[in-house]
Each structure stands twice: as structure tokens, then as C-alpha cells.
Image 1: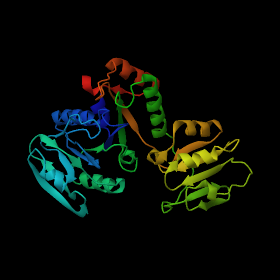
Image 2: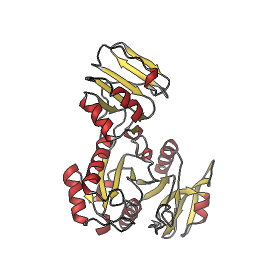
Image 3: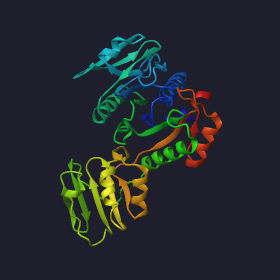
Image 4: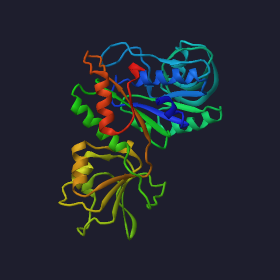
Length: 330
């Protein structure tokens, strides 16, 4: 079961591949089941989530339901708009556009808008603080396209939500989910030591050591000696983009070249460019590997298109060999 899988970790991100793929429904389901077990849980988000209406479609959105005893983190603005009783545990010193961040404990069951820490670094700090409150599990709800919250530097594991709102073409949906999961599951760089103080630029690592190739990601600034790529590594202290990979793909062969990024959330590359790079002999590896534990499928979309629920769930599960849960049926 999904909840028993989640309980193996101290922090889990719930991320959606697009709006209306069932992320909030999934989170509400998990919170409800954990409440039945009297499990000590905290919940927050990166960015703003839990709006009453979807900003794209204008359709009602499922609210985030907090249960008595849950710890939650949100901004002052949304704390004051909560529909439950709560006591404040901690108020941050930092101001955000929505006020200071408030850590509180719910004294009743009700609904809330979550607007937690605005960066993955700050979110990681708050997750550490929550452990001091004897929280067994922290759940993180993400805003649209904020995959950085699922970075392994932030949470221990992640659940990916997808469905009809992402694509009404089943083959295309499966193809895109498979690619996203392939990025999430990229292997860790072994036997490569990288200085954590390297904050920017592009670096070359080979038998001669490490040297900076450029302060930017513009490959026109990078000069490679035309002596092959065997046992060479490019470390990108930032995001890997389509433009960078397109330039590398101009080479006839890339056998033996590895690109290293911090983690999968730093990869912003279209599937055709990624697979072309791999076909030419290149590979992408990460400093920190992620832990995708399950996929949640949502067969409905706000524009009225629906998949047959079991067909969708089974198609994804068969292709990816991962547990897939239809929360709408649970």
C-alpha cells in the first residue's frame, strides 16, 4: 500500500507533472490514512498551493485537509485564512511576500492553503527543525513545475502524480511519464569527488584533475581539445539545458563523456536531445540520486476527458515496473 511505503521515510515530496494531475487529492488521501493511524505528521509546500479554484481552468480544486495533531507550515496570510483551530509553535524572522512563515499545530480538522518556504534550501532547514518536534514524517506539497522540492537534498523520497490532465493521448502520456521517471532515476556518480563549494560554471574532470571550462553554460565559451572523450566528465554547477546538450550533440561521437549535475531537478532537457546524447555514447549522472517510490494516476481531467481508470493505472505500471495507485478509487 502507498501509505505503508511512505512511512518508511522521514520526508516525502508529492509532485505533479502538471496542474490537475491529482497531487492535492493524493496528499489529502495520505493525510487521512496517517490520521487514522495517529501518525505524527507535518505538512508544508514550496510556493503556494491549495487554491479554491484552479487558476487555468477556473474549476473547484480539492482543498488541503489538515487533521487535529498535524503540524503545518504556511505564511501569515494563509494562516489567518485557515478554516481550523491551531496553536502557533514558531514564527520565522524572515519576511516573505505573504508575511512571515508560521509553524503551527492543528487543534481541529479543517482546510488550509499552504504557502511554505520559497526555496529548496530553506525547505530543507524547516524539515530538520520539524524533527525536533518529534514529527515522524514530513509531507511536502509542490507548486506547478517546482520539481526542485523533490531534490534528494530536500526530501528522502517522492511520489509522482500524473494523469489525463497531462495528456489525453495514452501513448504520449506513457512516453512522457517514462522519460520523467528515467531522469528521476538517473544513477549516482561513483568515485568522483566534487567540492561542495563549486557554486557556478562548467568544469572538466579527467586524469589531470579538475579545471574550469567556463563561468557560464554557453558552450561557445568552452574549448574542447579534439582528442576524444573517454574518461572525461563535465560537471555543471547549475542547470543542464537544451542549448548546452544541443551543442554537445553536434559532435559525431561522444563515447566516454559523462555530464554530472547535482540531481535530476537540475535537468531541463527535451527527451529527443537527451536520447540523442545517449545514442552518441554520452551519459548523464548525478551527485545525489533520488528515490521515486510510487506513481499516482488520475484518470480525469477538468476539460471532461476521462481514461478508464484501471487501463491507465495498469498501462503505467506495466511500462515502468513501479507501483501505481489510483487514489480516486482508494
